[in-house]
Each structure stands twice: as C-alpha cells, then as structure tokens.
Amino acid sequence: MSAHEPTPTAAEGSDDEISLLDLFVVLAEHWKLLVFGPLAAGLAALGITFVVAPIFTATARILPPQQQQSAASMVAQQLGALAGLAGAAAGLKNPADQYVALLKSRSVADRLIERFDLLRVYDKEYLQDARKALDNNTKINAGRDGLITIDVDDEDPKRAAAIANAYVEELGELMKRLALTEAQQRRAFFEKQLEQTREGLKRAQQALAAVGVSESVLKAEPRAAAEGVAQLKAAVTAKEVQLSAMRGYLAETSPDFRQAQQELAALRSQLARAEQADTTAAAGSASQDYISRYRDFKYQETLFELMARQYEIARLDEAREGALIQVVDTAVQPERKSRPKRALVAIVTTLAAGLALVVWIFLRRAWRNAAATPEGAARLAAIRGAFARRRA
Image: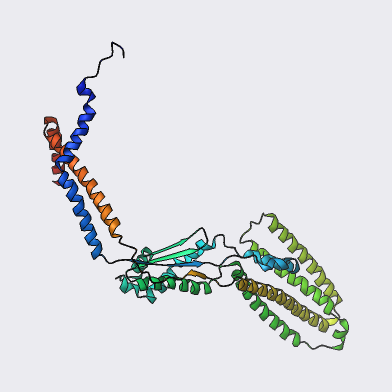
C-alpha cells in the first residue's frame, strides 16, 4: 500500500458487518412472528385441503392409425393416367397431432356434455361454459412414442374413467364420418367416381340396346375401331381428372404438371384422329348410329373397369390398416386422488408465508427509520399528500 493512500477506518470497514447485524437484530426481534406465523398459515392451508373436494385423474392411452405404403403404387404402370389420382389425396404428416385436434373438437365435447350431463355436473347454464370447463379438466397430449394420452380430472373417480374412455369412443364415431388416412381418402374418392361411372354405363347400355342391328351394320364390324376410340376417350377423361387433382397441390409451372398437360394434348390429338377415321369408315346412318352408341358404351365400360380396380385397391389398403384406433390402456377408476397434495400445499404455503412476513417486517422497519429523520418524514408526508389528493 502506498504511503499516500488513506487507510480505511474501522467504522468504514465494518459498514457491511453492521448492516448485516442490523438485519439479524430485526429478525430476532420478530422471531415469534416469523416462526409461528408461517406455521399457522401452513396448518390453515392443510386444514383447507381436507375441506376441498378431492380430484381424481383417469388416464387412457391410444395408438392412432399408422400410415402404410399404398398398394396403389404396385399398379401405377398398369393404370397409366388414373394412377396419378391417388396422389391427390393429401397424406398426414403427423397423424397424432391431427387426432389430438379431433379429440379437442367441439363435436366431441358436445357429445360428452350430452352423455354425462356435464351442464349439471359443472353447474353451467350454457354449452360454451361447459365446453371450457371440460377443456380445463382434460389434458390430451401426443407423445414422441406416437401414443396419445387422455387425462380426465373429476371429483367422481368412476365418472373420470368413463369420460376418458368416452373420448376414445367418440373419436371412433367421428372418424366414421371423415376420411383421414390416405387409403380412406382414396376409397371415398373412387367410390364417388365409381357410382357416377356406373350410372353412365347403365345409360350407355340402354342407348345401345335401343338401336336395331341390321345385316349391313354387322358386316361393318365396327367393334375393333370403336373399342380403340373408347379406350382413348377413357384415357383422355382420366388424364383430365388427374390434372384437376394436381391443381390442388402443384403449381401450373411445375414440370410434372406441364408433362401431364403435354400427355393430355397428345391423347386428345390421337382421339381426334381416331374419331375422324372411325367416322369416315362408317357405312351409312344406321351403322354410324350403332358405332357411336357402341363406342360410348365401350368408353363407359373401360372407365368403369379402371375406377372399380382403383376402388378395390383403396378398399384393400384401408382394410390392411387394421383397427382405426388401437386402445393401449383403457381408463380405469383411479384409487388415489391426484390433488390436492396436502403435504406439498402445507410446505409451499409455509415457505410463502415466511417470505412474505420477512419482506413485511423489513418494509415496516424501513418506513419507521425514514419517519425518524426530518428528510424522511417530509418525503412520507409528500407521499401521504399525493394519495390524499388522488382520493379527493
């Protein structure tokens, strides 16, 4: 230490020690309050937990449907343009998250409120309030293992288990009305297309049956040419449907979309040439009428076969997925309550009350020390005056 540097006095060096001792003195003066106050608060909280109705938690775990490789890819080369229709069905990136959203949907909540009379149980007047109460008492989470966990809290352990299991049942009922998996989407799509094609085939059969077949028509042997035209026409229709589906998930500037457009243009060109040659080869009005109707019949028949094949493939894929919802753990009636946890409540309340009392004691001492000096008294008087003016 330099000779010019001042040596700290004993009073300056002991400022921190004196301040710390002052704190301990304040705490020692109020030791009874700091000991018995938190204990009283903890005992009071413990007593309240005996009065509050216990809550029981029931848990159900399910495994949502898993996406599998589609069998449609095995016949892509056979079906040509129609094979692209399967791509229109959007796949599920994260099925578990989607099923969690379905479980939390308003449709499921309303069914549960009706089944268990939750308006009365939760003492609510409106459905909206009952839905909120049910949501607060239910926790639905999707884990990394792919399982969905449904936790339901209720004062009645039997009802908690029943509601948790009812969530699974209502999800199954909701899924019956929805097409969620890729196979379900394709099956629903081709089911509609198959029904429309069936009606078209029926009309074509009736129109063909209404035409009288004469000897000149039979000699024309139009079937080979008509079948070729019909197959081209069915291919054009399938490609048009594929392009319509591709617009839902591809931009028109994408290479796949442009290639599909070029293929459609080539098919239309082939169809136009085939129809022109078929018309030129027709032998009279009777044979022309017969060829036209026969061509329409073969077109509907070919299209029906393509749709029926894809529909059966989608049905097989859907059946191969197995059970839509696999229940890993059925909710059972809980034997122990989940809350309130009496020991935890008592400990936390005791610690919080002790901390609050320490803060209050120091604030009161600081207030008194400030009031004991003229400068502090003036500041406190100004604070009181400001509050008085606000009240006035």
